[in-house]
Image (cartoon, rainbow over all chains, first blue to last red; front, side, top):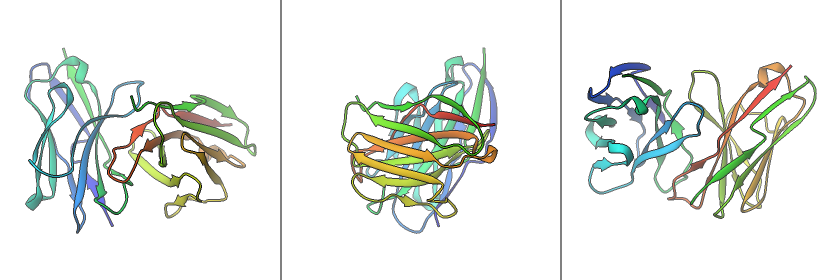
Length: 114
Length: 115
């Protein structure tokens, strides 16, 4: 069965600090990978996705993620966070070609202090 | 584009009653809609996958007779929580997708409180 692990449950950073959120998945086949963000009081929004091609994916708002197949990882990064990045971040995966059913990680709550 | 709405945003009901939640794709046709449940400080748990015109596929452990899902058109899916109990209180989120390789677009969620 597929599963997704996010090891950082709660991260607190100061503005301008660099961010890296870990995501590891467990699945034997080919996957599509996603990062979603949920700002306070808002619905889930797609930050970025990886389907195929360049394993370094750039998303909105300066976020990027790198797919490392050998490590089953898809870590999210941002070189310099802003207060407005305070949100909950979810990594998700689906099995390519079979279904677009998403399996979500437990989420990481990011608090950026001004 | 790709906006998904949910109605109502909040609902409070008494134990034993039924509640219907609507999920609409406003500007696209969704061949597949998904229903999730999110407990406080936890992740989204997929409850069921709904394809237009066919029966929903429920995840293991989800009671299909309790959580009735209807996907009658390409823009509307409904989730009915039947004979609701306090343990059904949760945040229910739907998403919609145009196809197998499309991303999911999420609704704003519905907060259900059963008293």
